[in-house]
Image (cartoon, rainbow, N blue to C red; front, side):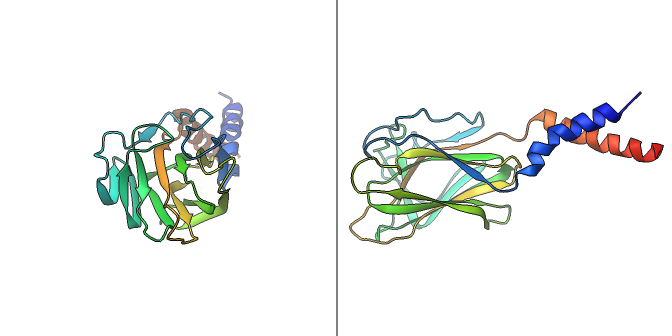
Length: 216
């Protein structure tokens, strides 16, 4: 049996996965105001979906956990019945100073994590991927939200990587202003584990490499 074609085809399947080591961000189309629904369809990552629709409005949490996903903030979290991503509820960073510091943590690594973000104030929000030890990695994605006009904060954002090395997302609104509200999120999504065919390709590549070494 000629295993060289199998070996090389396996490498072709693996190459796109191994090449991209830095996360990228895909941005949805913003609504025209924070109180209006997102004008673009929320992408379906076909994995885990965490929303807050079944929670009691105005309930508070230090950390909210749902399955493999945890959401936390040093300022505390509050469920608000005002979601402009998908009614009825959203999760709000309960900072009295108007800043925000949200961390979404995952039990397992993923290739993509998505979140709907809403804010009505003139602020800059930063998104960064987290690695397996909870450290930010890759570029910081800065989202500038104006006070009036089109509001790019009210949209759905997906941070993705072809390697399953995203273990969370850090969302910060560093500018504190007591006159501003905090930051709200909704519809957290996590892509499923890497496809079976990628795992099979990895196994075939290892097997092929061993066989080539034996024949050399």
